[in-house]
Length: 347
Ligand code: DAH
Image (cartoon, rainbow, N blue to C red; front, side, top):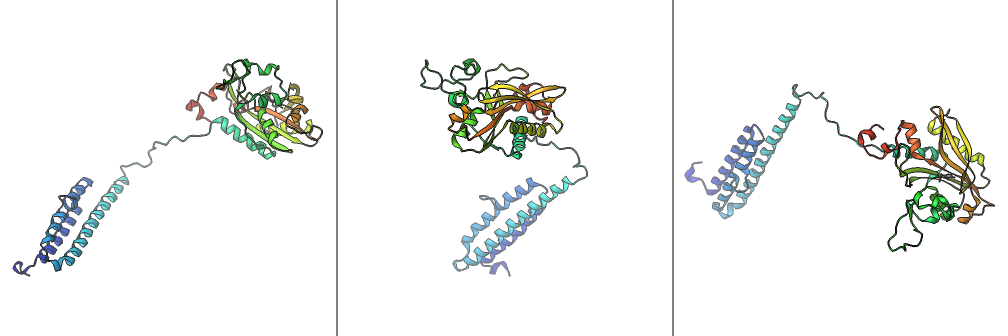
């Protein structure tokens, strides 16, 4: 068809056709992302792009031809867009190909991300829960800020007892409290508090352990720290005897340290047990104490409303840090709480 007879519609369609061809050629010629981006702006740029300029010519097309012109415009727009995306994929593929290049040595060590791990005390707590769980003890919890009833009174530790001395406990000053009255809150000094909390809220039989932090104003040295962890155990039932307690302590020690570890029980004293004992295991040539224990004192059973004629039981309290340190040959308790990751990463 000669140009003299061409209608404005023909002109418009021709412009679109050659635009599509030019765009495709330009996109395919682009050798890298930067050149491709330049070509994109040239053809598809929102303000100055060539597609936009051609689009403006649609105004010259006669009214009845507008639908045909619009349809073609859309087709070309889509085709140019598709050509651009294809060129983009081709460049990405080439980049991936370069990675497979023999000069790129995939066997070189990479920078491994540093993964966190559980603190050795947490690991020990999990293991203790596991061992005691197999013996039928379920975990129970109590607050770390306690009142004197749960920390002392209900455990048969009366007001005049030296264990309540302010020098041996972290009493808390409570807003609004009178200065001349005894403080009524402290950081618990033992997990035995949880015995009372559980018995107050549960009817026997009971078989629980409680693992958590306790606080005492000790100066930090290789074997002391003002905060440490205990595992408390409590079993209440009918006709419980000291033999049951010995069995549980022995099973615990052999499960944690190995079948052959010797365990011994010595007489001792605690206000909340009668009789009271201390338990040692033999390790590295010497006896090491791993906790206190005993038959729950009738006064304690009375304080939670249990009838000591019907119910009896035993309790024990073990130091978690010592168990953790034995297992990992840690010689200074302070290392557990300095939070030096070079130390902690070893476990
Ligand atoms: N509460 C004691 C302490 O912190 C340990 C203890 C001893 C707990 C005897 C008990 C027990 O349950 O029966 O030293």
